[in-house]
Image (tube, rainbow, N blue to C red; front, top):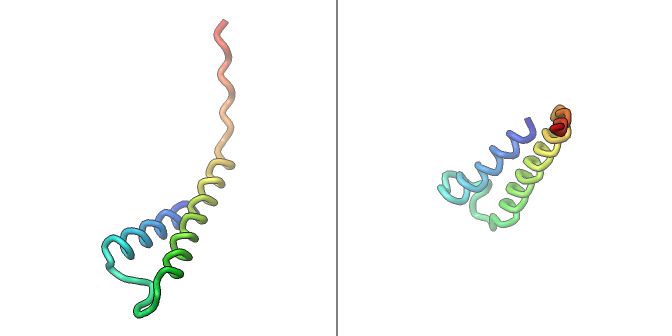
Length: 67
């Protein structure tokens, strides 16, 4: 869930806000602070989600060496 939220927020912040300029977080102000916070929290959520996925993945048994 956290990975999906982070991925969506990152996509929204980069593609919708910056590339396509569909909408902005605020209008008539300097957007740098808003962009850094929005994209920064997206990256943070994505990284947390990926770490959680990796840590909760089932452990596979080691393959035995051929004799």
